[in-house]
Length: 481
Image: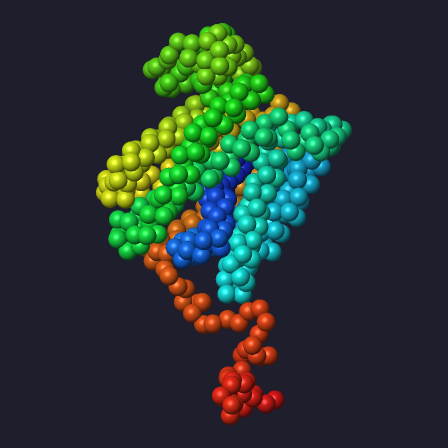
């Protein structure tokens, strides 16, 4: 590879965006789910008054605070690249994309910011029901943020509701723009994937606490809740993935052909289980296939018609090898999750869920499995969209900033590498400390009583002095101006 290709601003800009987004997506993949889990715990505590729900909620709020802070920092960085590295794209789509990002800030981020302080610091200042409301609003804010971000990305995948004037996209129907053809399927698939990711983390932490023998009650509750949730959502995630696949077949057939490694289209196409796509030779090496199975699960008919990669011009095909294997990693992770849930239920019916050491250890190792699936799914979606930024309308090569030099992008990429390799390990060390400390029954910072509601005395900061009748009164000694 020549020096010019190594310093190609387009390639380096894409690598930089991959680096930033890949790290960032790990955080909403967790915070969206954990915010909803905290809201559930707060609701259960307000309803049942059981202390175990309060202890678990306090624990996960500490974890949420660290991950939310990291997510905000990495999330703020991403939009700057639209101006620095992708100015042509920004100039072309700003009239459509800009308002959607603004809605995300006005609805989601403001809602989270308004109630986050109550969630983190208002435990002794508001009653349990109000704390539950604050937790619910933070959870709603994370979901709204996902809604608007996916509305933007889905429009780029399946654009509609626009007009093009002088090379720029202008909105013709906001309803069509927001609810683009792929949006409902992608929103359901992504949110359920985030919830599954979080549930596996909760399951892993519950298993860890049981193995350590320090917080058995909390560990059992976390494992029981996570396993019950995963029993519903892992199969649901598979069903939603199938529905999303049908939508992709209709609106992005080249992406689907790359996911399947299907070069020759037609009816009754085979399913490629494993192989190594060769884009230049237009074939798969060392491939294992099952006849007609591809048409069955892609179209739900044995003889369903599916387009192959050869049905599209060579310069409109995505990088097949990356998409092909990313899709298989995602599916493999999903099937492994399903197996873990199934084994968990067998152990629970046998009364050994909380005592089978091999399963608890395996569940701990499976904690990051959801993140692997999220990264693989994101890679499948975004690399499969290539060579387009706006699918079928605007190429990635035409979206990069024309004034960029390879040296400029290389310098910023190296800075991003350094900063992220500092931020994320540091954050993980904090999270590791929180998990090792476990769901403590009290917080040191909350040991000092805080007066809330109607104060019993006008100035809480003043020391109490004893009156002759035995009542307490603020002492003004030493506080005169």
